[in-house]
Length: 55
Image (cartoon, rainbow, N blue to C red; front, side):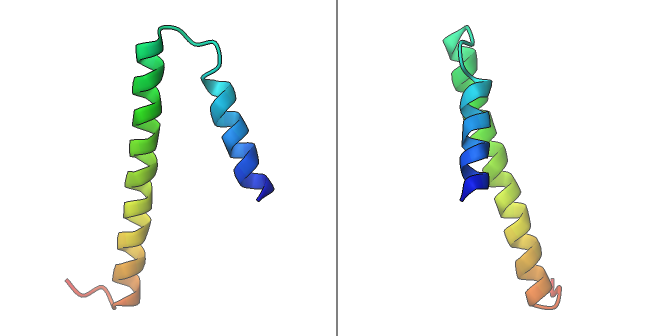
């Protein structure tokens, strides 16, 4: 749990006192999008690995 808290603190500190606000919002949305894409890639790989790489 400490690792997740550390990553959250790094994420919050990265966007402190940043201007303009619209750019900060776009970067936050993009970082969530990248995290979702990474999760989907790992999920797809695990799904294929557990099912014998059937296409």
